[in-house]
Amino acid sequence: MNHLEFCEHLSISSSTLTIWVERQWIIPEINEEDDAFHDADLARGLLILDLAESMGVNHDGIDVIMALVDQVHGLRAKLQALTDAIREQDDDIAQRVAKKLEGMR
Amino acid sequence: MANDPYETLGVAKNATQKEIQSHYRKLAKKLHPDLNPGDKSAEDRFKAVSAAYALLGDEEKRSRFDKGEIDGSGAEQAPRNYYRDYAASPGDDTRYQSTSGFSDFGEADDILSSFFSRQGRNQTRARGRDLHFSMEVDFLEAVNGAKKQITLPDGTTLDLQIPPGTREGQTLRLRGKGEPGFAGGPAGDALIEIHVRSHPIFTRDDDDIRIEMPVSLREAILGGKLIVPTISGNVTLALPANSSTGKTLRLKGKGVAKRGGGSGDQYITVKVMLPETPDANLTAFATSWSAGEAQNPRRTWGG
Image 1 (cartoon, rainbow over the protein chains, first blue to last red):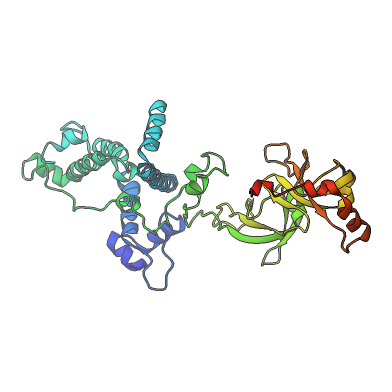
Image 2 (cartoon, each protein chain N blue to C red):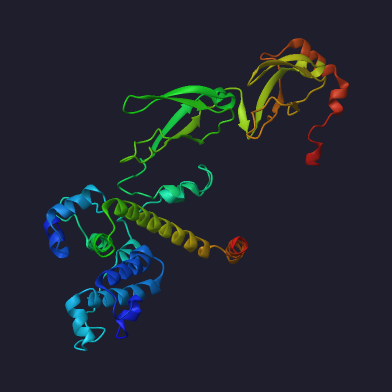
């Protein structure tokens, strides 16, 4: 969807989305078609609305939260990949890793 | 959600709208699914809290609920997709994913470091791409180390320190000399694959150097002091008398510097060379040399 459609979906003004993009909470995809925003961006927009409206977080607070949310997802994806990779190893390797982790708790 | 929305929000029946809002905000911050990406139960509790607030946060609906006109689920929200559902399976859409949280994990040259750093392609703060080059260096530059200059396609030059003992195919990394990062992200690295030219005299065998040393028949029989090239200059070698082809001598510590300190050795293999043109005296001597007839260098073949 394009800028206008995105704003209609979330019932926000065009200038609000412009602020979101400027603050890099939403990053439009650069492509040939008029299709910069996806469902993931909508869901992100809902989160931003939740933060701003129902939780009363100000813009600077949202900056911090979005940066941390993105980090958490980055880390979760890496952790998932790492876990999958360990699962694919031979049993004794996975066992050794599990044992090592057990000791760290 | 059909249970008591006052209880869900943890407020009294006679709470003010302000108290209700403040309680809701406190709970929402704690339970929002996008702030609890791994906790499935947070979503259900958040939904319940949101539904309760949708009811009690609206004074009109609250009074209708209080009068029993609508039940606790009277204002349930339409099903909603949370951002975490997309973020969990980004596919090739990695605009938002950031792995900067791993930058303090382990050694930069660790085998796992590229896993932790490379795929974090957050467009806002992305690391620049690595640039790959290859470069030919002379044999002695590789074994002894050297300073080289490399000119990049864009005309800039980089100083490259070839460390002593560099091997064929080894890749040197110039940190931060790749493409610049985006929006404050770190620059990528320049990766230079080294190809070592062969040498007319020396060959390399791990940390050792091997050479073949031609000697005359006279030197082979009588032995003596010979000048021998090493990778660090000429040295004098005492060749024992009666050295046959294939005899191998060792010059300790004259090989390639090892990574952890110390050096390999240089091995010198003797190769006896007869005179280039037949010598009448030598032929006459060999003919009359009776002990020579008894020598059978092929006796191990049997027969």
